Image (tube, one colour):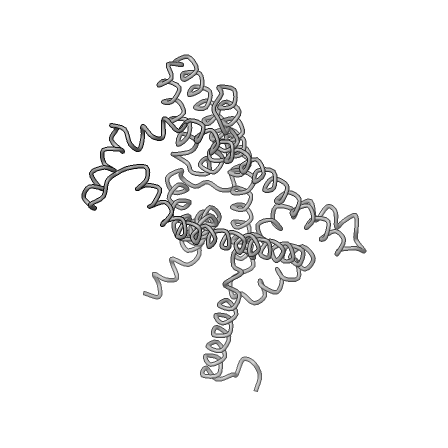
Length: 360
């Protein structure tokens, strides 16, 4: 019996086994989904450079893949270390400045004076049957110190655990990048041969993934970094404390269209107005509005190109929805899922809709 004469029951049974095994493999690998997605993104980004290097190192493909993997490690690690170090110093300075703003007299006035907070504290203390005095507050603080110490200890342990887990996932991602660069073409041929879709449709889906990867990392990433750096520099020039901290916040928020760096620049402008620095407020707001519009409409458009054309509202919703469902990685997952759906929708209208209508 040749392959074309296999009973339908045998084919159906094999497909059930095959799909069950595929589901089981995906389930086993699901804890490493983020590692695979990020690895494919970075491998896609360095793909052109890797192909050029491999052409020079024809007999040493492992060396070419290793050098490109090392480049990915440096590009990711150096900014993370620098930003983390700067943020730590800025956050400490911000905390110290905040404490300096509250001397003993100011703190006593805030807690035991005639202000709103002090009045509320007294009323709550009287409702509990105690007087509101520094001695009573000290007693409460001593009782709470054990709970606070336990909470801090658990949080420190959680941070250490998360840092170690992030390090392990990063190493695993680099190993996957190396494997993709070394065996990528053979893997691509195997996946295309296994999939029942025509090769051109599979290539179209892969191209969509690559385009979204470039859009997220190169377009949105570098564009948002430019906005954050310019915004942080403008805050430093005007004497705001912790400009690196606020610049980092602006970099992150710049990923969100329709919102962007206004989350920081608008409150900062209000602060300048409250200080009576009207000229500085106008200049600060005008500069950041101008640089935001320029980066969004010129820089990001040039970096992303015409490969990914999604409406701003859809990009915003995909990012916000992705963040809500997947956390930080939603910045990647959200736009990627939407872009793949739109590509599949185009293929459906081009090649499959008439078949569905005819079958119906």
